[in-house]
Length: 67
Image 1 (cartoon, rainbow, N blue to C red):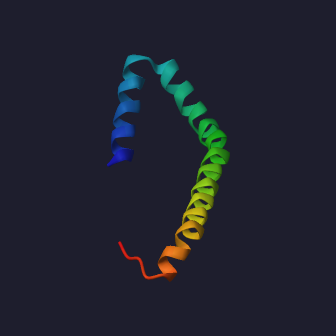
Image 2 (cartoon, one colour; image 1 turned 90 degrees about the vertical axis):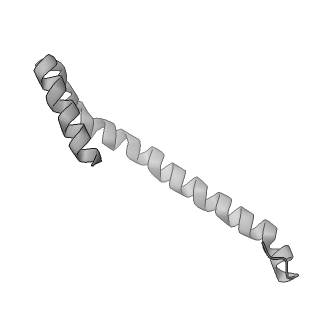
């Protein structure tokens, strides 16, 4: 569904301003490539925080605390 909305939005932009639509078509892969390191950083930080949470709650879990 998201791809369909993106395509319809791009077609609307193509009708209204074709140079801007072509620029968006060229720049989209570049923006995606630039966002990859940020995504990897987010995944890594999420894993680090999950590990810290598991380490902090380990004594309580060993003593039998349950949610």
